[in-house]
Length: 276
Image 1 (cartoon, rainbow, N blue to C red):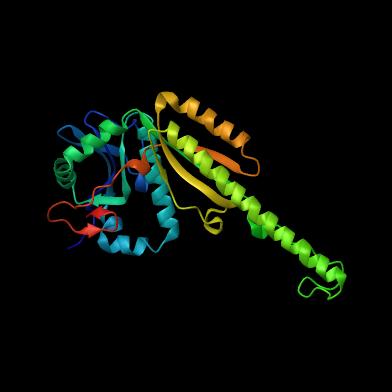
Image 2 (image 1 turned 30 degrees about the horizontal axis):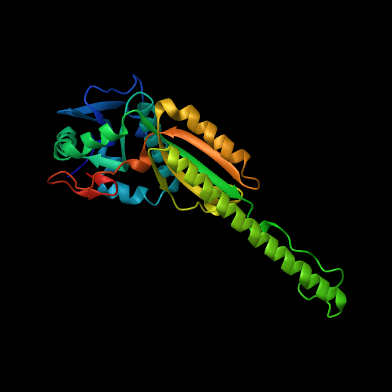
């Protein structure tokens, strides 16, 4: 069946009924953001062309990193813009339904779960804290006084070189252990302050492009009225963690504390991000 001119519903997040996105907010494919309401819930959606978001098209798009980056940026922009105004439950990237009826059906099926999550997350935002330490591979070992780094001389200068090399390695290991301890202590303090926390896997510097080894990659759920105090705590931890670079990001919608819905709508096809 031809999809020419047909539209699908791209769904960003779930909120309480009556919550509306700011006027003029555009989302994926530069499509206006609107709401679909069912009972006490509303979904933030955009009408997108089926030719670009049906199952076949999405399979191709998932191999296109530029398309994925644009879509993820637009998706997150909608969620974070709405989250600045009211509590939202972010949905995973490329959650698509055939029509408004399909969106309402999911809202009805998961109403109890969604409403419970909205109550627990209302008035709270997610903050990210990352800590980095210099990658031990970036520090150069001592160079022997004579000969090459690959083959030290066999005389006393060679023994001195080996001792310096061993001391250098031990200093690196000690520095790394200290950094791990400081990162652990920082997380413990932040976890006590936060209502909830979640540790993510350390980021690979080859992918993130950030210098240093990522020793802490945490997400923390903080009441809006305690954001200043939390930022102050992060600053204090940074000041008393020599050799460790601590960064604060946010506030964000509670991505790390929201469980995305799993079952597709009845009679729908499961796509990369939901029912289509």
